[in-house]
Image (cartoon, rainbow, N blue to C red; front, side):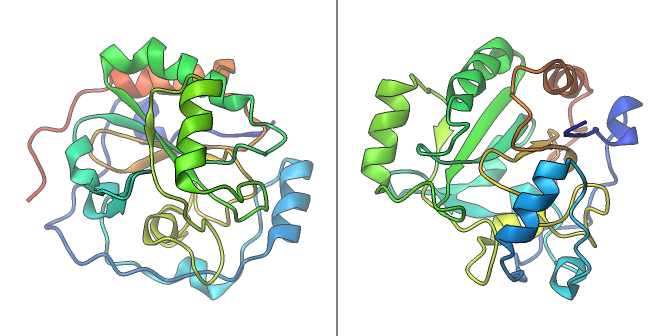
Length: 229
């Protein structure tokens, strides 16, 4: 089984506790270990990240606490997605499973009207995205017909790990879903309040029954009661 199942709170139709305020978005980068990730992904097991960096507390309380840059370099505050269900994916146009771009677009179209947004972050962390952002955008839009949101290239592991990914992979904050990104097309499912509620391995196609069912539960969950401070 290549799936990390959604959290119990999602299955019960509940939302994680809210934070008490917006805080600074400090990050703690983790050492890159692609070899360990590849072996664990192939074995279908959770990566046993005993490295301290993954357990260091982070001050960010939500995905919405971060700002990133889109594929054209414009700053995007992720709080704009408050209330939307997000599927955050590290992508690469030369990855062996790049056909998942098509599946991601199909999933996005299926649930877009119900509040799903797909956030794709190109990454060369696994050696499959050497292209510039302009070329990545052209390939995604023209070859894969992707209409979901694209962002600038980031490192998802290692000393240059993007702050957003330091948050997503942090096991102190997300004991069920933290740990190093295994390979291209790892998927983090985020609820409308910006909390991680599921994670799917790179080999898990976005249109697989488990992913579709988890997204459907998430978009059908009650929306956040009020905006976070």
